[in-house]
Amino acid sequence: MNGKKIKEIPLDFIVIEENEMKSRAKSFNELLQKRRTVRNFSNKPVPRNLIEQCLLAANSAPSGANRQPWHFAVISSPEKKRQIREGAEEEEREFYQSRAPQDWLDALAPLGTDANKPFLERAPYLVAIFGQKFELDSQGKKKKNYYVAESVGIATGLLIAALHNAGLATLTHTPSPMKFLNRILDRPDTEKPLMVLVVGYPENDAKVPAISRKSLEQFTSFHEG
Ligand code: IYR
Image (cartoon, rainbow, N blue to C red):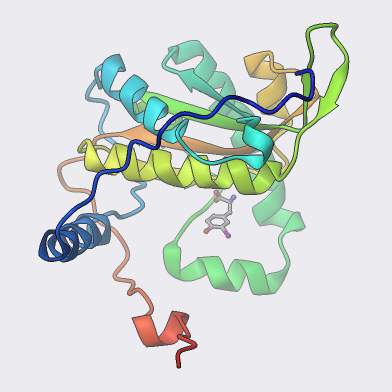
């Protein structure tokens, strides 16, 4: 970039009639209410093109100074999946056996999670999501990015919604620390792993915890008048 203002083009904005807006808002909410985090994945293959379309949707996210400071490493290689499972389970064993404070273990107990992560090998796709703290300019000089966690978080949210809309299930998996992902996936140190998204179909008999979502009143405040 040379600091010059970028040229402007007309906004391509679709005006929708108000009743249609309400109906769309309602159906989108109903669609998303059906999303559940799944831990029981089938090994049924998923077409790569589905994943690509959803990644393109994720890449529409707004980002600090439009740097798009994210990298999505898409893994279907059985060997890489095995390595990721091995790395994640090693960290998770540490977490569950000694690193996690009691209050955290208590919060996780109702979900029944533990250090075993078979889904990391069984699901057809893993998407490891990285935030790029820096990018290299055309001279190879490090340029700082802005609002990286926020930008990557938004892109990841869009990806989860896009995958759900496409008929796929996901699990947001956050082994901690996650540096092993840089090594296995050959990503530079300037990239910080944020999470692994496990993607696929749920097993036919998959069960999920009977949890509820907060009501609108519980999680919002309107400041009117
Ligand atoms: N990363 C661990 C622990 C874990 C933490 C939270 I917060 C969860 O909502 C679920 C799990 C694991 O993946 O088991």
